Image 1 (cartoon, rainbow, N blue to C red):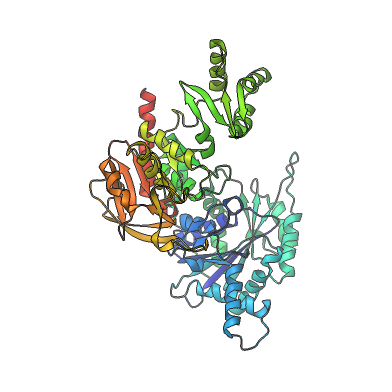
Image 2: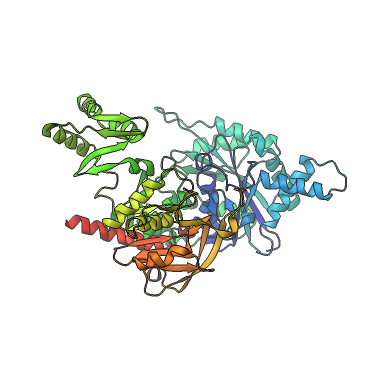
Length: 606
């Protein structure tokens, strides 16, 4: 191809409309049509990368093969389009300004006054072009984070405006995603927000070529005609991005509106009918699973939708491979840490769980008042403790009320598998360790990811090896028995950004292990993001007491652990979720969900 083609995806009206899913879905269609695709995400925040950002603000940090800590949308690109993203696939304001200031300090600008235009915008354009050097992609899709009009995004808008002139408008097209709300009651679509958003873009020198409109249902022709007139866009270039329960349907909905054909025509490329057979089959399984399985995800950011986005997706991919739906029951590790369940009676729970989850489920005021009267609040320990002085009648009434609202223990018999995800910090760690013990002792399938593996080792050391004070240096720097230790090359380093074992590395799998059965290979390559490892000094003792080391990383570090006398107990020091997709699910999640389905059948027989 003589010229690379570029598609820039912008968003208007408000954030969180789904630019990442829109960009990825366009990528699916164009790749399925035989074109080689590359993708990039631009984030206008000043952070150099997403590595040190709080999950409360940013959601999941996605890790690429080459170790970049990036925005979660790169995960959408890899899951949908199956492109391998790299450090160059993620660009932030912090990276741009850092590069320009470093260049100024070196004297690269030869005494010039360094300004946003041309120096910042030139660096942005340089980075966009760098993305595909040596890769020879046909089409590069670039998503601009934020909302058009945000002050921090202005240099990027200006840069892509210049970029379109330099590359030629026939080679650069703009997709603008906006919101077209419908008024409750009348159902009338309101186009004014989109008109203003397009007007904002045009005031900055960019005329969108396509409008993708987030809306509750397909836009009628009359609405599209009106928008075409006021937004200066051809009517068939206005695509309805309707609300869907199954996000994997999005590419198919776009295809039904000829979005792929129209985009290729505008780019001057021949249209090839996309091969969507596998995608349609996958969508059918997601929409109509043969059975369901319940997986408890025990973490500390469970109240946020995007924190465990790749884990959520990978669990569902495992379900797809087993033609099953996966219900993910997210449990707060601190809630589980506080829970004491004896003979089916909830003796203790966290104060937060009691006030914000349990009580609101009790609809009868009389029952609610009764429960409040018999549970004593311990504000110092943030718990609620059941009174010891209950009559048999009162005890029976408590059980009856809590059973009716489904409060029979957080990890109940209806849970068919437990997953402990990665994370940092001490909050909730004891709850995760307790969940691991519950799954191990009750023979419930359990998967530990990164910190989850470390929790498995701590739990096993304490409760099987007899090292009751076993811990991780991360949570107890003065631990007498640090079964999890800081990586040797990181000791003494105080910087938090970019100071971890990150990206892909290889490991050797032992034959005859569950790990080897799952992967069916002797060597694997997985992605990492952590500072702590299993302490090699304790490996011999752990193995002596029955813990199997399923895989070792290069350099002899523990990569996977498992148990022989358990239906499915597996931990990995890596993040398998980053390499899973709905078309090609990761084998660990396929095997985990298969084990959970078997657990479901066992529990139904009891």
